[in-house]
Length: 274
Image (cartoon, rainbow, N blue to C red; front, side, top):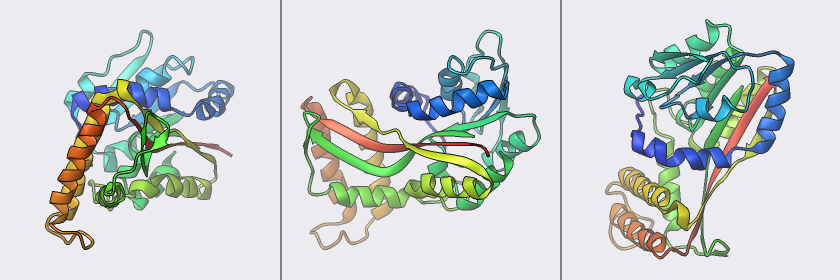
């Protein structure tokens, strides 16, 4: 997979990722983990080990983690918890990731912020090879004032469409599923014979999360402007990229006001053996 991530971005989002995880997913996974006496986890697209830090204290008895990422510098930042063996595997998810699942005695396969970056074919291979995939972006972005009243900008929908289109670009594993990844994953895992649950796990941001909200606006501005380029902008004056940049400035002002709410839709997928 060609997508790479800045360690600062990963550190900024990790606490929000963790607090947004679906409690229902863990309530379903934990009994299966205990009943199966599972001990071994493979994590795909591990980055600096956010999933390791989230799941290790919540799933007692983990003895071995295999962390897979194409960025060895990120993997080097992933600590090994006491009493847990951690194997860091530098490689592309297209090959090394699925091989780590197929070729090892793995009990649980996990990934966070991953499925929206992959293709249907890769996802089918994953379903055939392998269970908890967390925080997949679902295409929903909603702004509020004071965390309650809708506070739509005239260009929110315009930018959201461009961002979601950009999400579907090939990230190195075929055309990415983007916001449709959760539904497609649920379907493919069910077809492969799993029991599957798709659960809401939205990010709900407020003034205390201003740094992350600013980073999101920066990223959306870049993605939308890149997607639109010099293309027509649905009839408005000026090109699409200029319109996106004006939107971003308005949203930065929204965040700077300290009176905003921002919901970014995510989904947790859990698939367990039938």
